[in-house]
Image 1 (cartoon, rainbow, N blue to C red):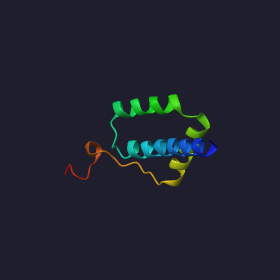
Image 2 (cartoon, rainbow, N blue to C red):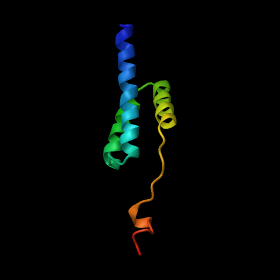
Image 3 (cartoon, rainbow, N blue to C red):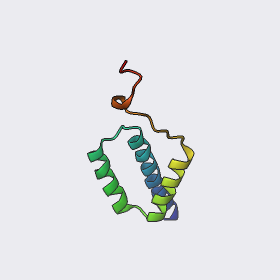
Image 4 (tube, rainbow, N blue to C red):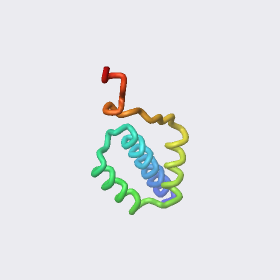
Length: 76
C-alpha cells in the first residue's frame, strides 16, 4: 500500500513537472493549461505541488526569449 502511494505521488509530481515544462516551452495553449492546472490542483497534495515546482524551476535553465513581434533584428 505504501509503495502504491509513493508511486502515485511520483506520478503526480512528474505530471506537474512535465506540464510546467510544456507550458514554458509554449507547447500547451492557455485554455488547455488552465484545465490541466485545475485537475492537478484538485487532486494533488500542496507539499507535492511545491516540491514539483521547486525542482522543475530550479533545475532547468529557463530563459525569456523575445517574441517575434518585438524583435528588431528582422525589421530592417
